[in-house]
Image (cartoon, rainbow, N blue to C red):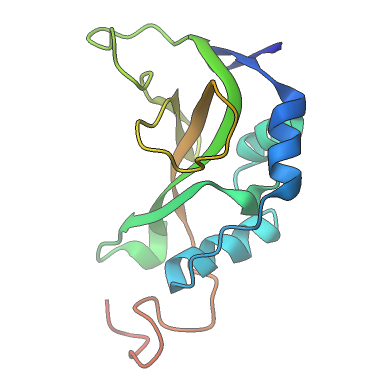
Length: 163
């Protein structure tokens, strides 16, 4: 196990097990437009540099997320982007979280706000990747991403000016 630190979090990571799992894993494969938008950005390495730095150190391709969800978009989505939550599973365990009151016993550490995204480490109670080695935890980020696809955000057949 290798001990790694990210913004107040410390984890013991099984680098070999993590690399092995991702070497065999497919890209995120949800066919919806929001997920295809994430994939276009991830494959083009258009995520924040700090996220790419963490993933590169773990040899996790950004497009092989274990969870992707566009949470919502509001009237200003064209200016600020669409709010996504994205996770990547990691073999190992979280051994320290940033200081935070009221977080004792929680499955997730406190969110750390960084320029351009929010980061948390924790353990999802439902298996996202059932074949992932135990113990494991998730690197979870929330961030606004621009719409990159050449189709309306609401899907094919919608007008581009519809919110």
